[in-house]
Image 1 (spheres, helix red, strand yellow):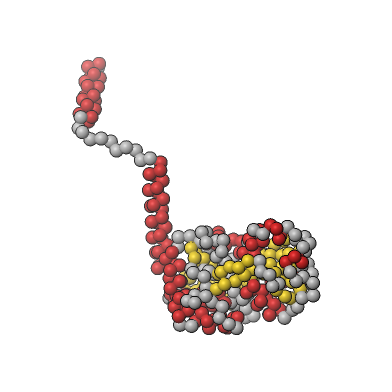
Image 2 (spheres, helix red, strand yellow):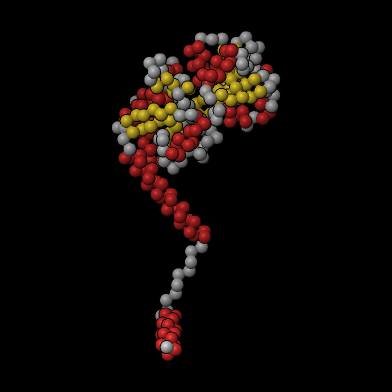
Length: 288
């Protein structure tokens, strides 16, 4: 028995010696940095291919929007979704040969909606400024600014007059972000509170529950005109900004398709026509 054990050990030793003398070296194990870089590169490639396949293969174009944000996107008198942005999105879908699907979302859930694939893009007065690195964007298609709306008889004429007042803003909006970045101004307010949508904000202003609303000037002008009420927009703006169509980070393929159609619509006058329908003038910026 012992002889068999010794013979087996001798054979194993010989095998190891021969292996060591073969001249072949084992590859050095990959470092953590090399493994991480390779994994990241593979993930980036996979994401790009997935995004390209989704853009080319999907027969729908699902647009995420806030249904209480006229004139960009809202529920019309006929119960159908409508608005300046949605009309542009519908035309883009038509030109791409895709079925247009308007998908109302809670504005503060937009990132989750994009990440889950529930929507293909956010197209609804979506401010690019300060969000440049969080999404894949088209070029800006219109300019905007954040302003304050007050009652005409409120006596509020300047930003200084907002001291001690109750100011309302939509949750997770560009106006809220601008206010958060201006602590000197917001520190003078009596109260700064949020609301889910601007329809509610205007009702609060009309009833006297708040003194001012911080919001997009484009939307403010439309709301005031439609309500035919004694509201005014203060001359001093809170912040200047631009609107773009936002896609999930890395979805360059679909963004490029939409961008191409927007440029074509600017060239053939479609953007101008739709803008004049909703605003009485051409407020678009592509191709200008």
